[in-house]
Amino acid sequence: MTTQPLVVVVDDDDDIRLSLRDYLRSRGYRVEVASDGVGAIRLLIDHDVSVVVTDYRMDLLGGNYWIRFLQRFVPKMPVLVISGFLNPDFDVPYPMFLKPFDYDLLEARIRTMLPEADDDR
Image (cartoon, rainbow, N blue to C red; front, side, top):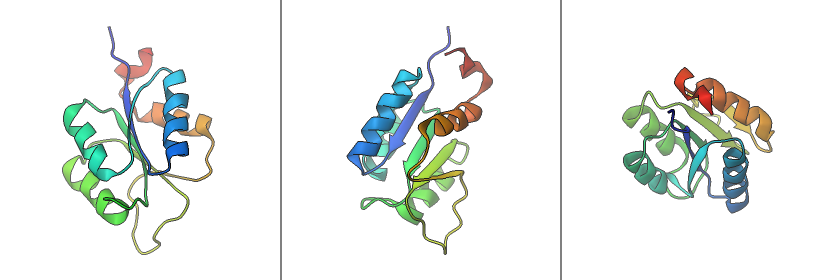
């Protein structure tokens, strides 16, 4: 029996974080949410995370520091970055979806980032 993939959604905007959580759950994913990078670190430590979907700009551990943390400490973790605006001086090394984005397209991209064993949802 295959466990449902766990997606961690990190966004300081309650509406986006919670609506994306509900949408992904309706598509068969387990979803945990955090409002900043610090909360997300706790989830990464406590859970077997399949994919991180994260906002870029957040007040507490966001932006370049958050991206650099992900690169350094979980370099093999599939990550999607969602943002309304980005710092043009920093190359974001992950796929990006600019807000507002289509939830169906985002979910399709998440699906391509999962190990094949997780396709049994």
